[in-house]
Image 1 (cartoon, rainbow, N blue to C red):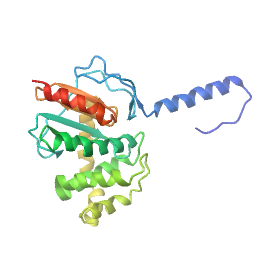
Image 2 (image 1 turned 30 degrees about the vertical axis):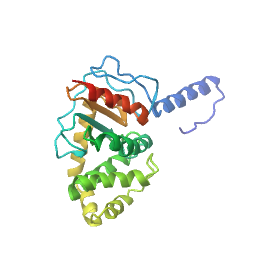
Image 3 (image 1 turned 90 degrees about the vertical axis):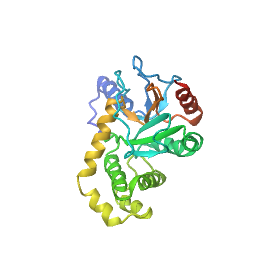
Image 4 (image 1 turned 30 degrees about the horizontal axis):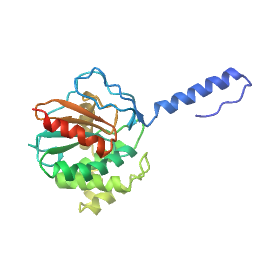
Length: 248
């Protein structure tokens, strides 16, 4: 915050302190669990690491239907669906991505128990570069299919320092590293089509109650939904997935 000329007033000092505190809270990395009254179950246990613009809304969780053309890992017919809303410049999403691609994929996805679905949810108010990175990931999918999408995602999370630290010029280079043509990626990024795809995910995430990232919805075979609000460690994710698998 820009410092204004000191006027010697103690009231001004107190007021300024309050404004600064408000800005810190607004950009807080602690996700407030405010899902009480939601139709889905929400894990308890205190604050959760996430980039957030506020708590999730208190309404019903509404998601569009999952189809085979989405960004998935695993069997689309798996009994449990894990829909992940993520921001590529969110440091907690980077950490959560490692958990998903590690223990969750090895212990649940590869065994046909869970299918993971990724949907972009860039928080432009916090990370101005995130939306273009989301578009780049959609370009990778458009140019190379689902496998290249996940490879691109892995590539971005591997090199970004997060919090707007990735140079946008690196995006076509990451695409090239995974076997896509750099020029094709640049052309795609200069277009408007992928922005529409990202907007679709943003609207869907808002309907699901996401106001921070990472934000994930677990859907059991009976349709019952539960939330993973933030970058929970595997030890806390496991009982949520196990409970969803037990739902009949």
